[in-house]
Length: 366
Ligand SMILES: [Zn+2]
Image 1: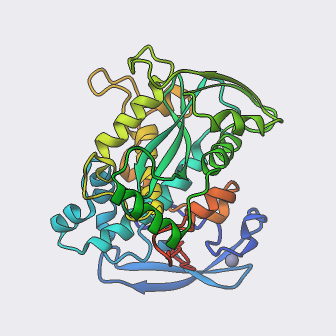
Image 2: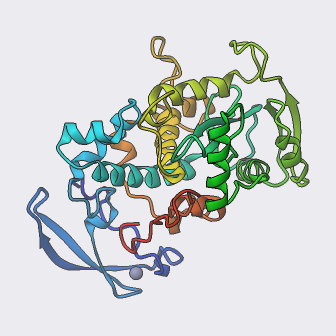
């Protein structure tokens, strides 16, 4: 085994439309020689699938598959949760900022699946805390919320999504006019976005028939979202957002997450020039942050109390970035990758101010 091939033998056919996984016991592969590469490992085993007859290699199972600078994946993960901007990271490694953005996107996609495969499939037994983390995309005229559901005891981040918002608050007359011009050109953000996305998030985290206690602030979209989830029993407890944000505040778990996101992500710092130009990019970066927060970062820097995943009982120790990146995850092997999660994985979350948003349509390096 080398770090380009995390398995002893290919466990399944990596092609998206091959049904090798439904017949995993009878599936066979045939060894088909090697190909040579300039970096180590120099020889990579090639295989042929017995079902679809197509070829693949041992490197098809690596997260570094088809990367020109594969050695950057791990350090870029560290930099992205250590508050570096793309250009700052790019300068350190002598590459262009778009290379770092592509690595961030790939890490984000991997982390979306990594979390999706590990998060508990059962209904959470602890109280949940939900809130929108306010940031913006493209310019301050396009604010957005990143909605997070956090465990009230474990501080585990169960899930997240996004909601576009209309710019509000006091504006100078020139700013109000600019907002009008932009909304005429690109359309007005959906006023129902928060209700729709919170509903989607709760559907994902709380399975049908589940019952939970949900703590939120007094945002008026939350009761409307909860009201539409009739097959779940949700006890809604509201706390004013004006209440002091101390450790005894029922919303403390999510307030702490917000602080940590701002502390570790350059794109969400106040008054930054490293803000995300596309919401999709912010979501990929948030996926990386969620994996770091849940599975890598200790609950206490000084007292070492274990990670949120350990507190939840789904892990026995913290994992390293290298371990997170050890095995490539395939979207077609994770059942829940559909709906919003599918859109987010394949880069289909649009930014109004950018008319043609490029989605992730790579056939092989998915
Ligand atoms: Zn196949």
